[in-house]
Image (cartoon, rainbow, N blue to C red; front, side, top):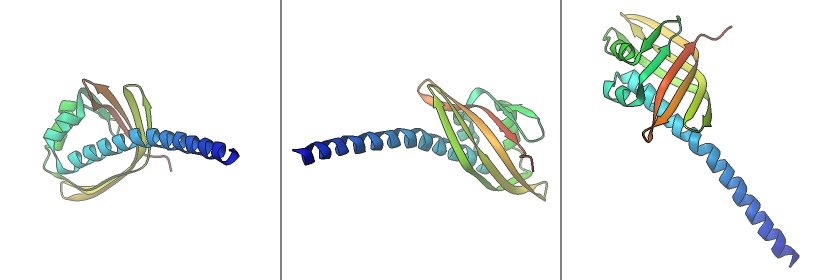
Amino acid sequence: MRVHKWFIAAFFLAAAIASAAQQKSGPASTFLTLEGKWNDAYKHGDIEAMNTLLADDFIITVEDGATYSKTGYIAHLRDSSEHVAVAEISDVKVRVHGNVAVVTGAYHEDGTAKGKPYQYRDRFTDIWLKGEGRWQLLASHYSIPVK
């Protein structure tokens, strides 16, 4: 009988741990997917994807402190003088609070602008908001890390 009780207790403990791990990985994987879609849309200049991913009142702050609305950011994407070769995120952390998610991490971008190479290595914070059954990016902030 003792072995049976230990087996049942171990089973429920393992189930609880698996459930907790799944809950933690579920939201993180959702936002890793969304962040990946956003990076791909940016890299490939996919305006249709941007219109879907970005909230109508989206705002972004870039490395030099300039801010752009959704319309301004999409207009920037249409600029054919810039070619993004690499757009990667790493060190990603996700915090979900109800219908708001905060995603932080590191960003690396390489490309050419007006024929000249450039490279960014930044930190980012993205705020996602769930409304009408879907997640959209509400705000994004990029900054150059202090060395």
